[in-house]
Image (cartoon, rainbow, N blue to C red; front, side):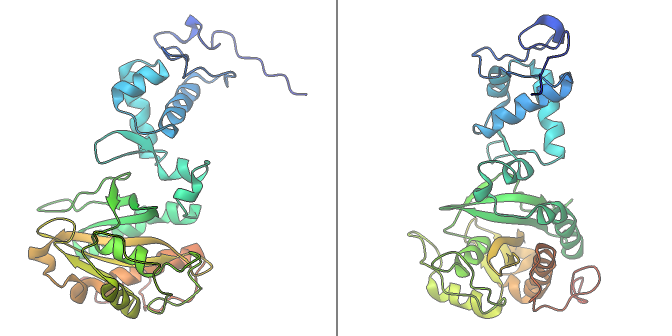
Length: 300
C-alpha cells in the first residue's frame, strides 16, 4: 500500500508555508494530504472552495486561509485556464473545465474537445462579425455562459464566463428550449428538424410559435427580449448523438444588428455552431462552411 508522507515544511497547518497556511480559519481549507508542491496545494484549496459555491474574494480568503494577495493571484491564474470563472456579480465560481470533470458534470454537458475549441471558434466569429459571442448550456431554469469572446471596441454586450441568465428571454434560451425532447435525447434530428419542446417556461417573452420557427430554420433571433437595445442570434451545438448540448450566440446593439439580426447573421452563427458540432462528433451538419468554419459571406 502506498504510504503518503507530506514533505518537510509543507504539512498542513504548520508554519513551513511562510505567510500562508493550508488550513482556513474555519478549518474548511484543511487538506489531509499535501503534494509537496506548495503552490499546487494552494491552488487546490481555491478550487475546492469555488466547487462549494460562488465566492467573493473575501469569502475565498476566509475559506482557504490564504492571504488576500495569494488568493487573488491564484484565482486569476486559474481563471485564465478556465478552471475558475466569474458570475454576473463578479464572484469566483467553478469554471467549465473544473465542472466538466466534477460531480456537477451533468450541469455542464460538454465534451472536453468542445470546451477546448470554443474560445477559438467564438473568437473567429467575433472577428468576422465584429460582435460579442458566447456559448451557453442549460442548467434547469437557467442558462450559464461557459465561454465568451467580447468585441474589443464600441458598444457591445458583455457576458462574462459563469454568468447566469434566464430561460425566459433571448435567442440562446429559444435554442435551448426549441430542440428539447421529452427525454432530452435530441432524437438525432438534423438542425432545423429537431423534436418538439417540452414547454415554454412561464413568463417567457416568446411562445411555442417562435420556437417552431427556430426548429424550422435552425437558428433563433431576438431583439429587446433580455435587455432593451440588445439583439442576438443563436444556433444549436449538437453532440455526437444529435442532442443539443449548447447554444452558440452572437449579441450586440440592435442599432448595428437591426431588429431582425438573423437575416444578417443567421447562417453565419449556424455555421460556427456546426463547427463545434463537428468537433463534438456530430456529422449531419447542414450549413456549408469555409475552412475557417464560417460561411464565405461571413464578413459581408
